[in-house]
Image 1: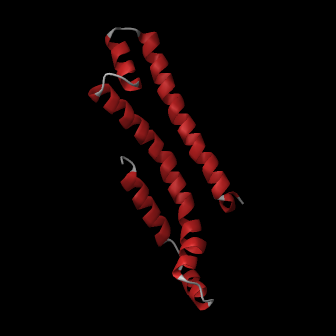
Image 2: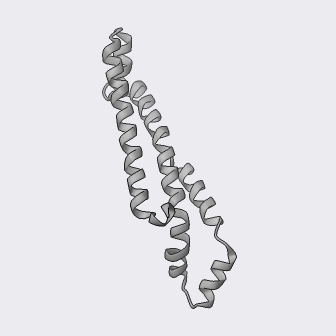
Image 3: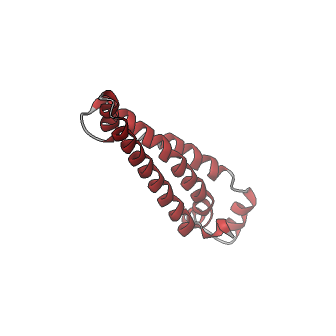
Length: 123
């Protein structure tokens, strides 16, 4: 839910970039609204969606840390804050590195999905 509006605005802005001539061409060829969505809107919007997801991963991981450090007594956020409070800095940095690795893995997953589903972008 944290990145919902970021994703929504990016998707909306991507869909607004569609040239009117493409819309007119599809209609003149007898394309339906479903054809318009799957053959025009979806391919134009998908790279923006994946970019937004990759950017949103950082926000999501930061919010995850914040919520776990304040509202729960378990999780990596609590582990990091608890280690810091006990002055166990080596343990604290293990938690920070683990949280960073989770963020990097999620980022790379979205990167791989974008390369798989948006092959035309890298041409």
